[in-house]
Image (cartoon, rainbow, N blue to C red; front, top):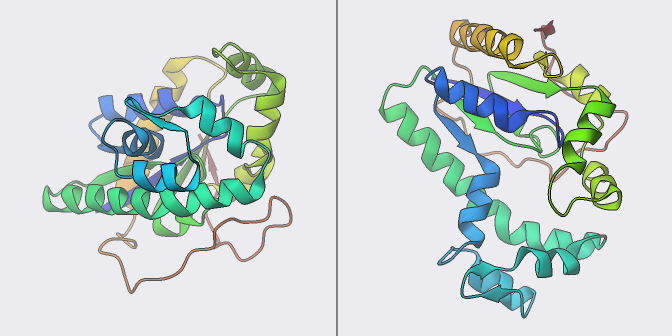
Length: 229
């Protein structure tokens, strides 16, 4: 089984690309959706989050607005939240990959916003970045309910800049020209992933991944054959 890592900064079209990959028959693990389940009603993270951030959990799960007010702009608080969520998200991701392997899936997709930031690209046979010009990105994001310039700046501050991600990714897919070119590029990416030797599954000995990479001057990444779809 080959593992394809899908990523992209906020507003770049990653969710649309993930939906297209599902239409093309590839199973997709959605890291954001996994977090929503963990923090939703009955979620496995609720008790730990309430203990660390009192008052943010109610009958419908975590009040994301209340939690955001406690962690937004507070790096230490964000680290405490990540320490709760990341092990649970990793367990869900590994369960997904095991299910895919049992089914004989040729290519499984990991949809992870912070793929490079967390070092998870090293667990992928092929990495795919969706991207768009800054003006299109900003237009898309600011249309979202509750989004503001300040919130957008805060999100971008947690992400590796798009030009750096372009250098790290195996395949770069522009999303500003409509859906049809994106679908064609994704089909080619699946073919490319399926043709590569399976290097990342089954997994090797456990290794510790860095919690985050520095946003600039990245070093030590594996050499890749660059393709722009």
